[in-house]
Amino acid sequence: MFEPLRFVWNATRGARLTPWRSSYLRWRMETYSGTWAEEITAGKMMAFLWAERWELLRFLFWTGSVQREAQKKH
Image 1 (spheres, rainbow, N blue to C red):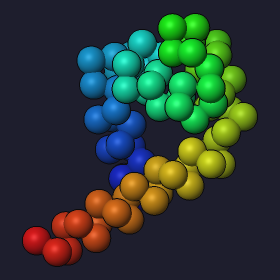
Image 2 (image 1 turned 45 degrees about the vertical axis):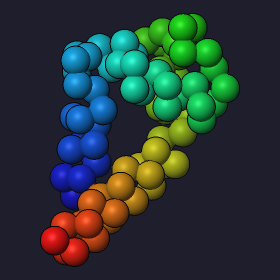
Image 3 (image 1 turned 90 degrees about the horizontal axis):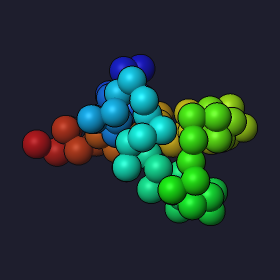
Image 4 (image 1 turned 90 degrees about the vertical axis):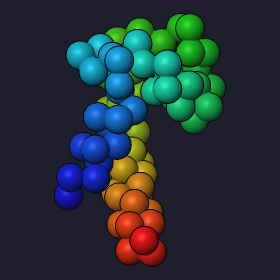
């Protein structure tokens, strides 16, 4: 359950209060949606998050399962 929060926490390092300024999230959004990273604003980021919320949640839970599998192998 905490894996999605852990991913978001790590992905917004350096821009936690302003995630639309995170170079990593902007790059991810650019590669997923085709919107240029330089054009992403707070409004565009929030609209994207809302429109893709179920896909993003599925991705975040997937990252958690990958993390758990990686920890099992150690």
